Each structure stands twice: as C-alpha cells, then as structure tokens.
Image 1 (cartoon, rainbow, N blue to C red):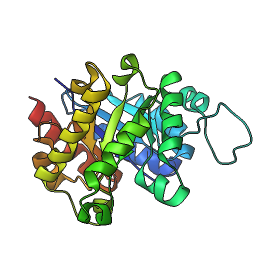
Image 2: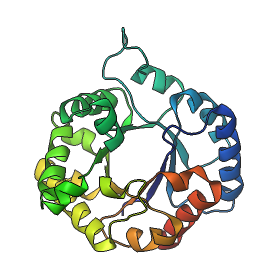
Image 3: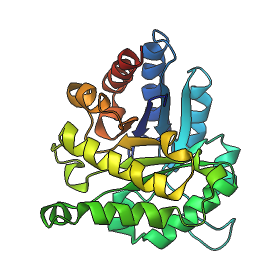
Length: 256
C-alpha cells in the first residue's frame, strides 16, 4: 500500500520570516492529525535553514528543495549543490518542474543528470513531467509525458527506483484555475505506472505518482480517490496553513 505524499511547492514565495509563520500554522494543525500521510514542504533556498529548524516540531513533515545542480561545486552562480541540501537536512528535491523547463531552459538531459546526482547523494527526486495545452489538443500528451519519464530515468537502476517520486503536472492546469478531471489524471498516472513497469522489475507498484495541477481542498478528494494518484504536488494551496492541512486531512481520511 503506497502512503499518500502531500507536498507543498512554495515556488518563489516565503522568505525566512514568512516561512516561520507558515510552518507554525501548519504545526498547530498537524498536531491534531494521525500520522498516516507523509508531508513535504519545499521552500525557496534562502528559507531552507529556517524551515529545517521549524520542522523539528512537526512529525511526519519532510523538507525538500525546489532545484539543485548536478555538479558538486564550481562557478555556477545562483545554484545549490546536493552537499548544501544535505547539510540543511533536505530529504527531497523537486526536479524538472515545468517552470524550470519553460523559463530556465531545462531539458530531459539536464533533468536526468540531476536525478542521478540526487540519488547518488541520498536525496529523493520528485521528477515533474507534463504536457502543454497545445500538446494535449494535438493528442501528443501521452507520447510527451512518456518521453519525459523515460528520459529522466536513464541510468537509474532498480535498487534506486524506490527512492523516486513522479509528479504529473498538466501544464495547462498550473496557476490557471483549471484542473484535469479525475479520469484524465488517472489515465496519465496509470500510463506513467505502465512506463515504470517497463523499466523496472518491482518498483512500478511502489513508486508514488503525485498530481501536480491545481489540487485544492475542494477537488482533492476526487483526485486522491483515483487508484494511481498517490498524493499531490501543491502550489498555491500550500501557502496557507489551513488549505494545505485540509488536503492532508482528506488524504488521512482516505487512508483510514
């Protein structure tokens, strides 16, 4: 049985002070919950140390980064290494988010390099894949996402596959108020799991696949009820303690 993972991608929001306030609000809510769901918050790099300190008070909530470089160190202004992330107790790192691909030129090749580096250095990559509205309208969405999954996992062996998370994010649903229907989400998650089954002997049943397209409290239940949806990569709804913990509570109810 795969445990739900509810992950908050804070994007370019919440400096250290806001991070403390938000996590203290989450702490107040989380202390009333059974611990049957895994939680994850991914603040901006500047707030990771603050978040690590605050998370000592929240059981079941892990820390993740929003990006990393595939080199150990060097002249890479503005980048962050796996060593740095390990030093502040990051457990996860988001890789290949559609915004990184769109605005910063990331490719399947660079995402793959980061995935292998993360795994080699004991970080769990949350690998983002997804299609644009144009690709979906052209009926290219399955081929596009399949290619992204396969490309990201080149060189990842069976023994490492259990440490990856896939996040399916229909790009047309991010920040637009649009959401894939539960059937659309399930169709893509099921396809991703079939790709994993082609690549790995056993991991396909254990890898968690998150939905990352505008999951909010009002639609979380119908999305999380789908058999191959194992949680959410939450954007805007993760920036408020009440909405983020409401999604966690919904996942808890479905787990019981």
